[in-house]
Length: 333
Image (tube, rainbow, N blue to C red):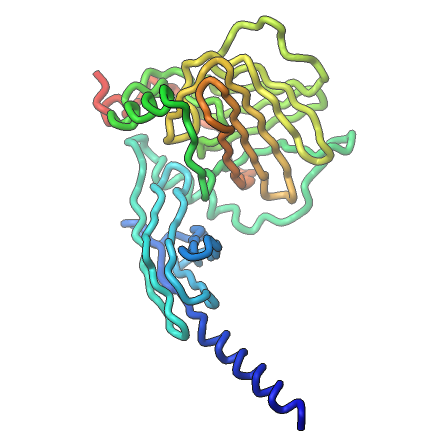
């Protein structure tokens, strides 16, 4: 008999817990149809807790068990196909479903095929399963064609006053002076959501991509950075293994490039880029990026991406001067 009050109390608490939670449902669509495998994030305003769902082939998504409260609901940009979506003050009530239909906007800058290619490739290789392959020496093999992604939760960069002013000017004029607009190397960071092809040997990793200068080489043979090397657009890259993680250290940059896709951060020739690549399974590559520049940043800038294997694709020829629509889009004369 003494246990009865305790049981009653537990039942009351359980019912209260259930009633304090609700659901969020909806669809994710582009003007030409539903978006499958979109990542939807619900960030609770009071706690900062992030809940994640993925849309089905129909574009439908559901959060079945959200704590009642107010949320920001967002969808990261998908490659260069769409811009980031975010809606503030979405209220989830206890015991009730909240409906939110999400209309994404295309972000294509006029290059034929870019608006659909990323999504089509991502959906084509949804069900890749298996262990990550290894080299003869037992190291992870990163070789493959990778469909790069953007960071779903980018933290804004903290810039020194001069760099912040330059960054604001660049965005005020739609980045019309971006090096890409003049067919120069635009961004040495692995943040551009294009296809990247990795070719790995014991002493060298080569990266190929559809962007100037189209290639990059990372030395894995134990050499050191040049003492007085000439600054370059892509810098000088050395790789070393920390267990199953490839750590790439790059220095020797000039100060002409604009950093991070669609962001356009300025930097100095003091820039140091550190990348960490880890392949947890056959179909995914975890990419962590840290940018250090005491001449431009208050603190290091970080990005975290998950790339997906696209084994049936190939790098296409990309000649910047042919069909380059960026100057027209941005008003460059």
